Image 1 (cartoon, rainbow, N blue to C red):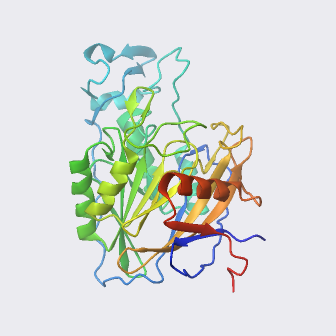
Image 2 (image 1 turned 45 degrees about the horizontal axis):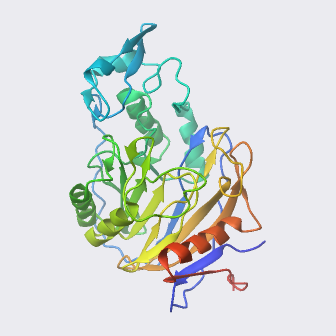
Image 3 (image 1 turned 90 degrees about the vertical axis):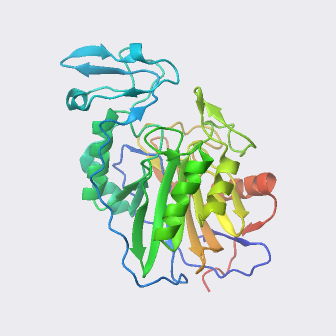
Length: 364
């Protein structure tokens, strides 16, 4: 078996670490996320217990910015848009959620995508090895506050911790070390992707509660031609999807130790900034007849395994190349097309601060 690809800071010998690809669950309707393994063997943690994480958040009165507000109540379509216009906000009555069947996409919509999955499928995520799931993304509120709350409950019952709500810091303790996860996107139900002051406040709050801070974001324009990470803000479907370079740097200066992105549906490059790793997009990990997989880049995906030092500095990591088949199920790609693409994008977009290579003796 060909080993995963190794990447280390330039000028560092970097010790190779072993990798085990989990048994991916095949019966998951919609996963647009990345699987991240953080190796904590070298991380020195303090003995205090992690802070308790209350799960009594109420999202029923969350103000949202979805341009179209139509719901089905009692079999009739109720149009909630008169009080809103593009960019305006509204407050969702809590009792509407009881009978909502369609929230974002109204009848006859031709270019609107609402995704739902049976709550019981959350166990497949746990079985595949997920422990944290970022809900800061453009589809988390497809079925309104009740659908969002249902997703959070299903994940927690399956043993997967959610993060990504406004102000939310999710703390896990592993090997005596507290790790904080915070999620960001350009939506009102998420941590603020486009608000540097709000970003700093959340990351600093996370850094006070944990030794390691992982920032997760969902942003960037979408499509096969969006593999490069541009300077400045990106827009898609009339939305500001963030200045991702600026976002990542603000996060790291505020205390983030690892920044991991999703959103473009394609792979993007890796950057080393202040000795912290930024992965701007790892593509689509898995799906089921819901992703375009044709062409040379849309089917490529990757797993990343990162080793972080005792003070949050990046030490080394591994990339495992995947390729999605026509249904969206990931397969190990022996040709390493994903790793080669990430290496090319990393060098072209961010220079040579990372050395990405495959070592024949990685396992020795």
